[in-house]
Amino acid sequence: MQSRLEQALQIALRSEERISLTVAGRTDSGVHAIGQVASFSYDGEMPDTILRSLNGLTPRGIAVRAVTPAPGFDARKDAVSRTYCYRLLNRRSDNPLAVNRAWWISRPLDPGLLDACAEAITGQHDFTAFTPTDTYHTRFERIIHSAEWMPEEGLFGGEMLQFWITGDSFMQNMVRILVGTMVEVADGSCSMESFQSLLKGAERPEAGVTAPPQGLYFVSVDY
Image (cartoon, rainbow, N blue to C red):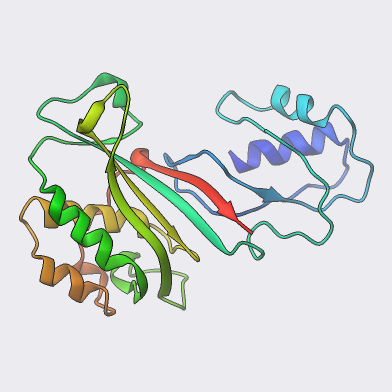
């Protein structure tokens, strides 16, 4: 998606040089972004039709909501926190309306244990266990400002759960591995004590599965 938007910018701005975007948060293939922010360098005059042009040049999977001049702004480096939401459908049978929009878990999950895991995550911890072993990251401590499980209101009722998490920054697959491991605690496959020990710099193999990307949403970024 990033490359499609870069191509659209180059066409809309009639730039001879390739335009490169810096995004606030990278998303794996299959992950959704509701409030992505991106920055790019451009010395020319921004046309009044830029918003309409970009939405006409990109596929329906991309919606550009605003283009604003911001000298010196870097979408990634200037961010102070990011918020993600993970959607999990917990019921005996799947729901076709949730396909590619949530992770379906048919076995019972203990909501109290999910809440306990979310509470344990809050604060500063070493999240080495929650990113791939073969990683480009060199710093594994992150500060989680808030983490909470809640039922989703509306069409799915209490069968759709949402996990909301806000932190200073996130590592590759970090939220998805956290969710996968919390599910293993909530279904009895992993103890709460083991989960808490993972937050002290354990190795990746000690944590749980990586939850599917389709349930993850990059919601917003604060500056």
